[in-house]
Amino acid sequence: MFGKSARGWTIPTAALCCLPVFGLAVAQDSAPAAPSSAPAAPIVVDVATLQRYVGHYRLGDSDIQGVMTVTLSGTQLAIQFTGQPPAEVTAQSATHFAMKGVQANLDFVTDGKGPATRLILHSPGPDLTMTRMDDAAAAQFNAKVAARVRANTPQPGAQAAINDWIARVENGQPADYTKMGPELAEAAKAQADQAASAISSLGKLQSLTFQRVAPNGADIFQAKFDNGTLMVVIALDSKGIITGMQMLPAP
Image 1 (cartoon, rainbow, N blue to C red):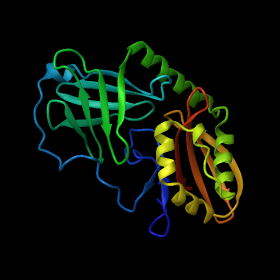
Image 2: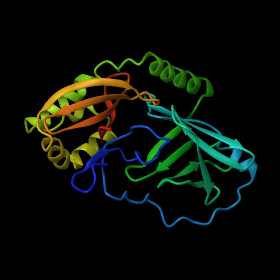
Image 3: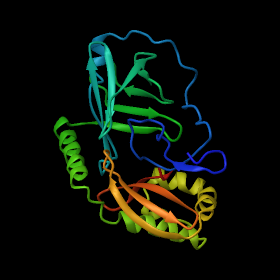
Image 4: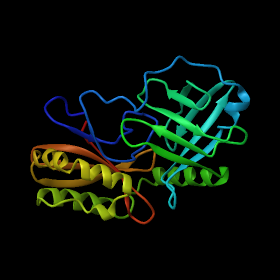
């Protein structure tokens, strides 16, 4: 992220190119391994079993934050999150799969007879559970995100949310966790001191400018400080609650 002299602030799944902003975590010089044992040798899973995993899974209960689409081509299973490219997964058991090239794996929850009801993603950070959803609802959500990307208009309240968080850091105040989703709030509380130190080292905020809507529907802003510039990625739900935030060094 920032190299060895500073911390990069990012999300648990930021290393997964196919996944969006979910929460807040510290990016170490070398990312921690996903919470699983050493990778097992790939095994062959019959097509009938793999077919039960195909479909769409939603992130978020009352409010959809993203859709994971699972597809099957021959005997190859692949996953694709809203606005992101697909990623192949390799079977390590009948229900446990590893993503290729990244530190993450996933489990499908099923009774062994019908379609899987849930998908659980394991990565550096909290596990994420996604529930099977209707195909039409998934298509509607993805189309809505694509329309936002085309319109390239920030979510209402996104810029104000970033300004509020940075202002609180500058004034030595804690973040307003009531305005965050539970997973993000939990991670932010655990890392509040480190986040404050990283932001404070950059000096005062000079400007915050909207750049574009990311492919997954999150908004990207450029934050210029006295001593540096950050790109801030933020995602809000339909009620204006912050469901994810990512801070990266400006290119």
